[in-house]
Length: 137
Image (cartoon, rainbow, N blue to C red; front, side, top):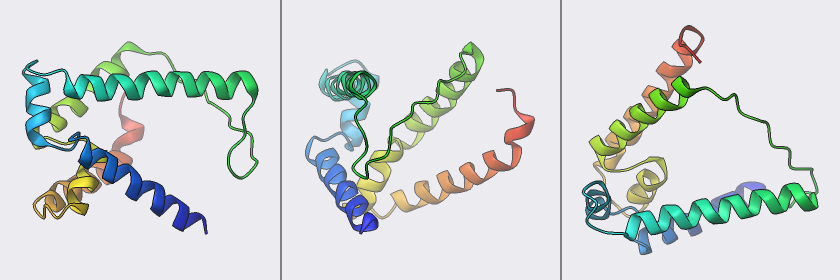
């Protein structure tokens, strides 16, 4: 049953991403050229909603759909890990024109070449897992 719920939420997320044009390469290109507010509005809205929801969960002890307590693990504060990780993520995003969410949205919309990007990202994730312990964190 959980798998069906997650599948439904993923499909709903993909439809929202596609209909809002957040998966559009042209919208991403506009964003990187600072020509349009569209993508900044979507990302900013998601950020504000996320902040509000996390604060509500923490303040009122809201539980998950399954009745479990939601626990937030504090992240280590380090400049280099976020700077280098952000640069690598941004370069990959600029190179292929999609971050992980839109990649699967584009695959669902029938853009077959994005499957190469998905395969490469899975390979990159696997490679990161191999060298993770040797990297500065």
